[in-house]
Length: 433
Image 1 (tube, helix red, strand yellow):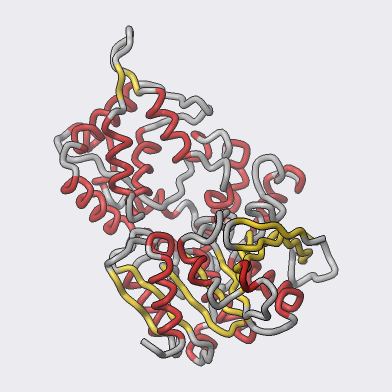
Image 2: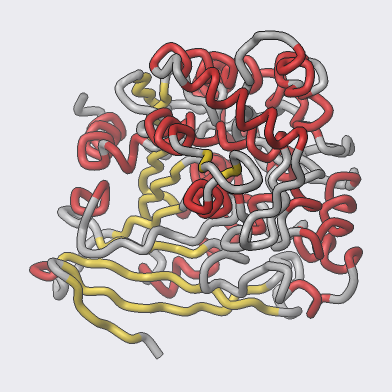
């Protein structure tokens, strides 16, 4: 039963759907999807077209907005919006260390999680679309991994789409995970260099923290073991518009004096554990590299293996000299499943996924080459998370896709500049720019 309620300027309705776990076995096991319908208060009774929002990730539920901030306010001028928790996230049959043992052991858990990639998410959308829209096609707005899902949508079920809008989420159609990370590490180096140019005092601060972690066993209040590699992974902040500033404020007061000498402060540790823990989004760690699997090659901890090709990211070697410490970015490593208490019970499951060799293609180049759906994509000029060259190659491979390449925003541009970004994409899709 749907339940409706109000927030400032909007009417919200909780909606739940039942979909097959395996869409190739529609009579088999089912899972539940949750989505929140949002409509402007003054348009609640109107027959509006639908826009479904696909959140970035993988592994994150849809934004829990209050009112109509960011891009949502602009969307509500024209649409009734569906904020979908993709399968396994938010309130949609969550997949985590608490629930996955219901599937059985690691092998059964890994088999289950192979059905949590973009192709299954698209088929979920198609399953619920007839109930939501009465069968009419809808507009999809895909942010980051949601954009990957949108390209899969154009490949698998373009008849379900009236318009496709993508922000920071054009995937390579054929790159292996190794190719993705070989392109990623140089981008991360540029972001780190730009951070130190902005905040040169952070060079010594980062080196001091790293040196402390190399010589001390630090366990955060939530049980997370803070190694130097874990500290380096805070560089994931550098992909957001305010990320460099947030990292600077985190580093500036890391130590406090104690009877035992300088130690990492409780305040620093509290912030770090909130940034590093995957308790709220474990699917991100479990299937992150699997989103690049499209053939019979395993991903085999790609980010960890490729990192060895870039020795500047070796903290011990850096501290033996006088170079600035390199932070890392959006990458998943096997040691995370040892450090993070939310991931430790899932280590063997993650190993099985990393070794898997039966991935199926997510995109259909031939179908994309003949695309007839209006598509517009924002491509951020030096996006830390999604390689710009890969994105533009894909843009050229999708018939009719129009791009807006900008350095005005970072990867989170749809949040930071929401109304303007959405306006620009809608204009491009409607050929009005």
